[in-house]
Figure 1 (cartoon, rainbow, N blue to C red):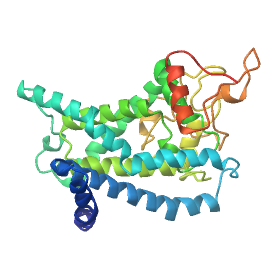
Figure 2: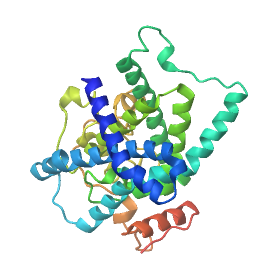
Figure 3: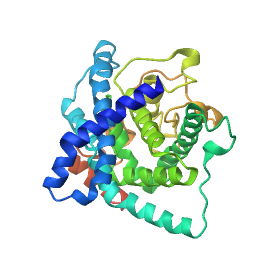
Length: 327
């Protein structure tokens, strides 16, 4: 079955590349970048498949069992824009030509100096080199790292200044996962690339890890009243479990008026929250957002996180340099 899916993906990537991407590359004078264009085509195929699943599966579920009625479609449309930027390869294209290229060049220099690759799939010959076993190992490693990164986004004020944009969505839907400050995304992507190079993740496995993770996160953010039950909730993160993390004063605020701390930081697996004491399995479906959006300060002002894409990006930079905007 895995081979069948792999072959189908390879066929789709090759066909789209030969019929569309390669002719455009030559027409626009980028014939020297065909290898990069072929890799980008793979990410485009992944993104199109993810969007198809979201529209054909997640969207109907949201309509059948919503947590709350749709009151702010304009806010959701901005989230759709974030998703398209990421899933259609625009963000990935930028990273290929800039940060990731610099990281890989630096890594090549370190390899020349003798820095080894760990190759986790070779630790137990005959077992860890089995495709599905190595994939699960890499998934666990990346999910643990993502848990740590997510907690850091909430623990350091400078990082929360960027990450707060993600939590400022009061109308959470399946499109909300990619609602992030672009600088925040760059930081996370750099860590992912460095870890992938360090532990020896193959290109195909890396694409699969990212694809599965992103699709699961879309599902977690859905406006969907769904729990996986007493035991299922402890095996994989559900929309209910993750919504708690977005709850005002619950999931990302340790006490009134604070943003440090919180609960349910896991990205795919709730195991790390259980292990480190940050799991909350008991809170129900709660309103989402940030306390300072809805509770005025001593001067009667609430925090402005922006309505449109560019306003949200600009205000994120203002918060980063300690110039928050209130209204």
